Length: 143
Image (cartoon, rainbow, N blue to C red):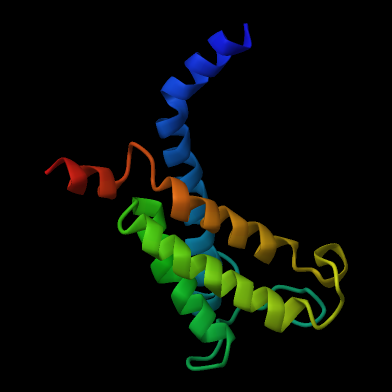
């Protein structure tokens, strides 16, 4: 019975990988757009209230992080250069965790770094499995 289920699930896994990549890329793009453009909502202040402004251009590390997240998010969303974009995105999230979250406390549940860890390992997974069946990388390979 499980063999039958495995066979059926294996036939749709390339499409599900694409869905995972699209959702992850979209969320990452929006994460960067929030920093760069204050869209769809502004950045939170120290109290957690959303303010209407974007991060000032050139502010280290937030503006640069937003630029990386926006550009790599678009690449991952479309499935273009997925593996290399995911590699750099995983590195950016590891950097964010160790510089912004880990100094506050040891565990991600304590220091607010759960999202950074999840992004890091989700992108790390994409480095190894690629963008799935519905990616621009797949179109480029067919040509």
